[in-house]
Amino acid sequence: MAHKKLCKTLKILAGAAGIAFVGMQLVAKKKKADYTYKNEPAEQNPFEGKKVVFVKNDNDAENADGVRGHLEESGVVFTQESLYSKYAKRALDVVLSFGGLLVLSPLYAAIALAIKIEDPGPVLFTQKRLGKNKEYFKLHKFRSMKVSTPHDVPTHQLDNPDQYITKVGKFIRAHSLDELPQIWDIFVGNMSVIGPRPGLWNQDLLTAERDKYGANDVKPGLTGWAQINGRDELEIPVKAKLDGEYVQKQSFLFDLKCFLGTVSKVSHDDSVVEGGTGEMKKNSYNYSEGKTDEELIGHIGFGETVEVDFNTKKKVLITGAGSYIGQSFIEYAQKHYHDNFEIEELDLMDESWKEKDFSIYDIIYHVAGIAHADVGNVSEETKRKYYEVNTGLAVSVAEKAKREGVKTFIFMSSMIVYGESAPYGKRKVIDATTIPQPANFYGDSKLQADVAVRELEDDTYKVIVLRPPMIYGKGSKGNYRTLVKLAKKLPIFPDVDNERSMLYIENLCEFLCQIMLIKSYARNSVVLLPQNGEWTKTSDMIKMIAKASGKKIVESKGFAPAVWIGSKMPGKIGGLVNKAFGNNCYEHQISEYAGIRYQRTGLKDSVRKAEKDNKKESKMDSEESHT
Image (tube, rainbow, N blue to C red; front, side):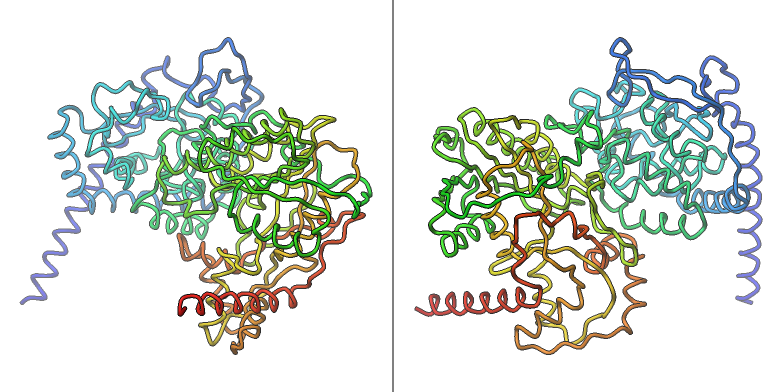
């Protein structure tokens, strides 16, 4: 009896779903023309089906990308869809969107009611967006802002946007719930589940950049590859390139990867600035804008053989007191170059540093900065702090040094300006032609300073920028300390092949001492990329650390499949696996400088020395605490 009732219920539900599907298809077909402005010729896109380029013009009004200029036709679009894109993907879109509309209908009702109660007015609002082949269409969203908010203006261009966002709106935006009505746009056929996010109709720069990669030739999506790699925090060229990468890799498996990656982000994502144009670039320290690739790269190396004068003496001021690198350099120089250097430190924590007389120093070595944080979950205030310290403070110190007659300014940049490590299984070898391309605001804050201080160079003011990889050694923190903890706690560790550039702290200090003592060199600005003489394999380093610590650890290749699967996982799991087993190297040649020999300690000896020093330090701390 119960079985019959269940079967009857299922038949009724199936029938109701079928009727709902047919009804919704009829509505979608009827509304399609209205949603794509077919009944409003004046609202249609004159560039539909055409290739375009962006032409800057200061006489034009500022568009939604925050720049002045306009689009011009450059050709006709010729696209040939794959069978997956034309048939299979559309079938999946219809099934998923219909199922989503049915299952989420109670949530839709709850959100609609909350919106109505807080700010009476329409529950939904539409925006003119760019669809496939640049066809305009009406995108639907839950209203997250007050009825009085200006229409078709990106949030980042509003004056004090917080005043317009409702409480309900803030919540649904933070959890991406405002995007849910776009499931209807997918069902209608104007969007897909996965694809580049649809740009505003007046985001001309974004449109032109996407055209370079064919990213306007596919249906826009509810989520996509750029969405899970930074969303609107990305600057436009980076976002467009990621969208182009999606078009090239479009397949069922890649769509699945994007979908799963989205799931891990919808709970909360601070990188969302709807309609944004690269929030990590929207700051007052945007020195890289308009720079050529060559200017971003800089002059790698001295360009000639240099001579180190071991008999000269230099007066050095380290700006950024108490730093790990600064303290290590002082200790090393006092031990190995005590006749060559007179070194002082300067605290930059308050404004008093501005009263310091820089004119008595030969070299300013700037190490002050905020280190790497969890860049995926920080407030806008924290991001601003990164730029203020890592960029603004560095530039202010460099400018003061130049005004007061300092001969050389050395800036501690980072390998992070080249972006994150390549994922497990993919090589990444940076050479002299690799263009810096930060993956987040932390890396960008370093690059902005990197570019800005190099611009200060002249015949009387030399600027040296260092972009070292991960530094390790006595007292080091960060990723190296994580490796130490793993080596001491784990009995077994995956034995997988990867390559990473690293730099032992004493090799760095030797490098610093020698470049500070160079007699002369022609270039006024140079970029140096010091590293150890050999690349590092994560499992080998773990084994070396364990051995130096008196522990035993077994390496096993049997974990390789698990590492591969973990690297493909979306969110933090994949990020951690790729951070540990990814690849990130400098080509050996670009770290070799004729006339300088600094790679004095090999990897095995450096690990042994580091752990020996750390043991000694821990013992001394323990004795002090007992005393």
